[in-house]
Length: 304
Image 1: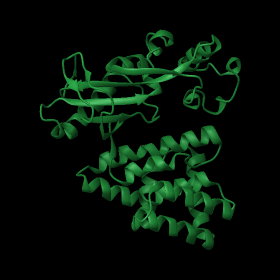
Image 2: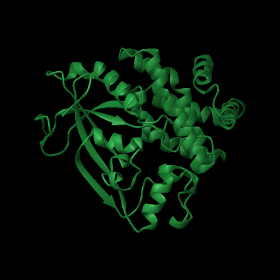
Image 3: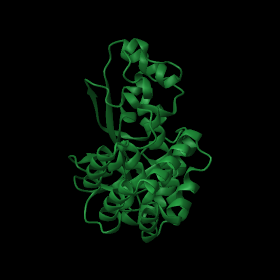
Image 4: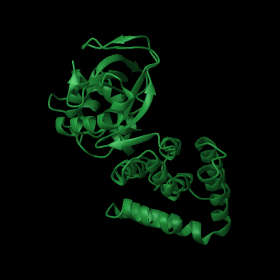
């Protein structure tokens, strides 16, 4: 990995679950000890992160083939591409004028994705390597609880309650919600919005930043079956709904139930308020879904 990669990885992962720490050290040791595997890994890394001759999807495909050839877990190799590339991502953030604090906060995403991989697949790694292309490009970064990136509004013109019309093709700021284990309280949400506003306000002539999000969290029927005191309900209400759709399959089932997602509805765990509400909803024969919404922010508050 090199000294820089070792240093950054240790700074990111120190203090995390022993399983993850041991798994990452084992993967790094394997790349160092198996010369053929290490050479194949380095070739893909060089093509993607150094020479930029291939995209993240091609890098993922090539690493999957390397993993099969050498009999190692592909999710582990995918993770090592990200860890090995941390200095490259760090440099991309510096070129954007972003602080080291923003870099480290953004890269907490690695912990989230590794935890999801351990929970759902029982292995240290990541099953969403393609997601990390936006970080290598310096296009997406965290301000507090949420991650943000520039986007374009792809729907017909939409009028917000404050009177602001968001037109198709307008620049908007897209949000992502990594599974950081940080509650979506009013204070935490507003702190993130305010920090993001300070960075993105230069892109909006009138000083009003338009944020958007597409997520299973914004499924409007959450307001029907989630408990009144749940922060997810408050998050839903931050947005003005552009659409909310039901799906026959609960594609985000794993986000709620983790390793238990494949169980029949009646056997799903109910050990958290969210799991209990979802298990009851599903057992009652209801569908689930997702939503997309917008809100306008003036630097201090959501504009209605």
